[in-house]
Image 1 (tube, rainbow, N blue to C red):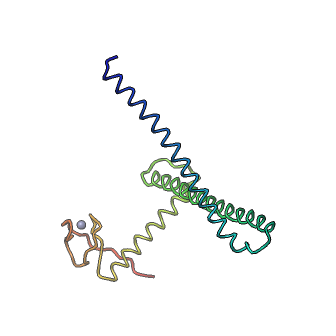
Image 2 (image 1 turned 90 degrees about the horizontal axis):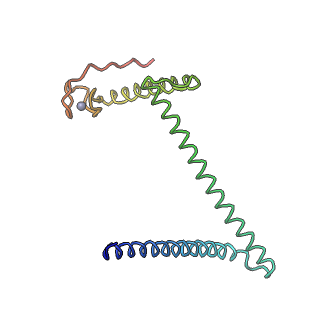
Image 3 (image 1 turned 45 degrees about the vertical axis):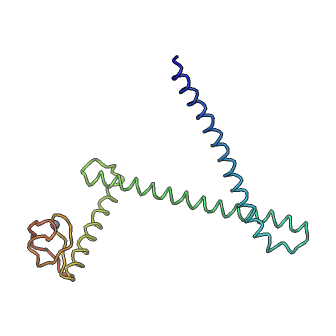
Length: 169
Ligand SMILES: [Zn+2]
């Protein structure tokens, strides 16, 4: 092995070791910060009950800890519930996307996909009506909002087809 190669290898190894040390120091300092925060919270909560006798105080301190832990657990649970909901939504979206593309969708989801399709159509129709009431429309091509009098889109220049608005029942 050439001298320079050796030096490079050694310095790389040194850096690796240093990196690990820094990581463990960071972890330790994180833990200390966390513990300090918990202690501070306990101290604040304990202030309210601190007027009691020492024995009661110790018990109250434990109780404060329970409260903090309970709150922490609650936050974790809520975060996880939200995360699961988001994943459910992603699953649903991918199923509906497949349905829209005409791909085979599990029969169990067909009814729901058709429902989403219907509701989406209604939403679009309502948006068209809402714009129409303000003498506006969306460009057939680029979706830019333009005046209903515009024969061509002011943004992309596409000629506009006549608007079909269903009469309100
Ligand atoms: Zn346009």
